[in-house]
Length: 100
Image: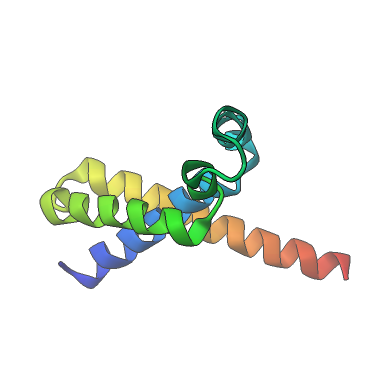
């Protein structure tokens, strides 16, 4: 695995982890599990814990990278997810610096 593929996969896994555990757009997904199973359930905890969820998303992403990293669709999707993560992080840091 090349360093480029590794970094793109890492960025994509970070973005997907953030999407599942923290982003506003997936709040109904998280709320479904919490309402259905209760806040103390392991699955409810999993969808809100970035440390826990990143193991599963990272495992899936690096498995995909092992088998499909040569495919243009994989490269496009991981590049878009990585760019989204980096741009969002920079925008958050710059936005919080302007408020202070």
